[in-house]
Length: 485
Image 1 (tube, rainbow, N blue to C red):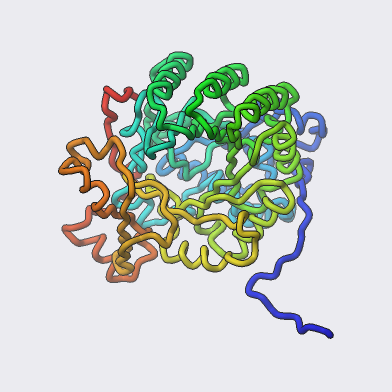
Image 2 (spheres, rainbow, N blue to C red; image 1 turned 135 degrees about the vertical axis):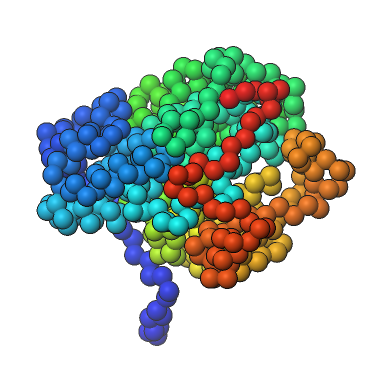
């Protein structure tokens, strides 16, 4: 019996991954495959400024683009430019080789939108939310020792470095990560790496309630492997640690790093010891658009799995103009899960950092997207869309306890206490107060109805928005007892 074809809102079609031909760009016409696969060549030829970008693309980008890029760097950017060839090569892969057409395709490219922002991307009235903060998640305020954020009852975040192989414009750790920009004088880790790691390990020895350690930065791909391996082996000596997660966007942005034989040998050594002690070792990476997922990314993920890593998981960021449609999210997830052996895990609402207003999506949009992607992917590979609420933590987007759509304010509660709950500006008025208090989160102002935009503009209850001359937003001074930055 023939069954009628049912038209679905999203139509799945398996699509092979493609590595764009880097030789289409004038500056890379003589680059060999061996060079392209070499991690050191990738790092040495990363683009850090407009001059180096012009050396790669030649006259394919018009002066208009470079003017917009310079204006953004001067007035808005919170992150420096750092683009490995692997990342730049995924931008506008099929664009015509004429300057006007190539420039238009490059400007419209979703990977370019967050990896190489220009002034025209920013919202002219609301480049930052009025309540944007440099450390919007208050991670430094929850440092147990320098670089070790103890935010959840059983989990910690260990920041081993303040650098990455590539810098994303919307970075949630823009306060710390990367070099300074005209807008942001970055804070700094002060301890020597060995001393910082020693303090972290000592704290974990004294705190057996912590069973899960996310090793991050920055990006662990920028930690010299011998130092990272030493830290991981010492973590594995702690019987209380049962989960270790390595955070590295480089699986996507610089897969060549994770394909180096010496690195894979080290991963296999650590993974073997972890398996022998029944510790779950996983790698978390960061892809935001299907164009980022290439055969080299799949090869790196497969190599990590073959070396003994339990999972390679993706933690993306939900961003307007990048992946804020059901089709964009599902295309990406099917490429990750079906073609690259990377498990779709989370998509975060873009955090309330300065300069991010044009990327952020309102909560109701995220709720719609979560509903729209259900039923297409296997349950275990259907990502959760989450809101990382300041002073609360990760919450599924449907967990808001109240939502004022007009003013774009949602309210959230938590079921555990953090170190902030004992501080004067926290919930210090009783042990139950921390669990009862409602914490606000804010939609981007330009997505609100006119009445809501007027409220944020003129109400005494809302600060006036930061204009272009004040894109950095409020700052905070960490508690010296928790480690200065």
